[in-house]
Image (cartoon, rainbow, N blue to C red):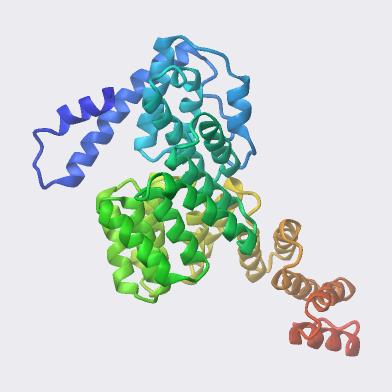
Length: 411
């Protein structure tokens, strides 16, 4: 590819051991290439850089593909090159935009090459939480090529991530999907990895480790396999080994943000807040739209008493993902601690609007209304707590105090 040849020329004569110099030079090359392609593409299609939201929308890929028409070969090749550059940089939302634009060009590529590019698009969808679109793309591939093992594995991953609850029915469906992949290719690395993830999630750590070890035996330099291996080790309480696995994944792919994010969580768990913050901030340099890492960084700032910084991270989380009920709650606790009661109530109610059965939020709202000496409103929320948890001691105690001191402000 164009980008790869230029990067090779730039980095060929750099010191062999200076990885970060090479990475920096590579990024510089990618920026230069991207700039040229963007100039061509924006001239060819003035709306390509419009500020359409890529995250949080359903079936955006299907709608875009079905609504797009053919493009000339020169434009298609340019879109594909730019999409691949963003994909290599782990900037998946940007990659999706351009790979969609190249879709009609991709359809004209030789079979193996075309499938490879479609799988990149499906993978980018998985990485940006567009699970229904990832499944749509996999189904599209499987309709024409039912023996594509990667597509079966990616489809299983899309089902896994989009499931509200991993119950027995979902587990069985996923196992059959991954087995279909492995029946086509017994060493399919993605099926092995995703099946290991499934077993890790359901608590079968022995089987999870067996599968991931098989994947790593076949593909020792597979960064995602190392990442999943780290997760399994962490679940086994082998914390030091999990850190080694995450660091190995990062060594293999410095742009891979998931092991950095998990490494930050491990360091936070160990109380090493400085190291955790460094990992979180590096993740956000790679992927500024990672709302989970914004949230985790906010929790860290909250833990060390940097409440202004914590609030900023929770607000950023909400802007990126308005359904993040935990971010609303944590923001509410900061407002409550600052005696900003109206702002706290607003944040708590928004959290409740996303997820209505949160006892913690109902208790918080009751407490804030007590602090405002609005006794009836407070009692209503404590009653709602008892509807969910009839034996909740805090709610029972507060209602008893309200009844005995009807008009008294309670702290």
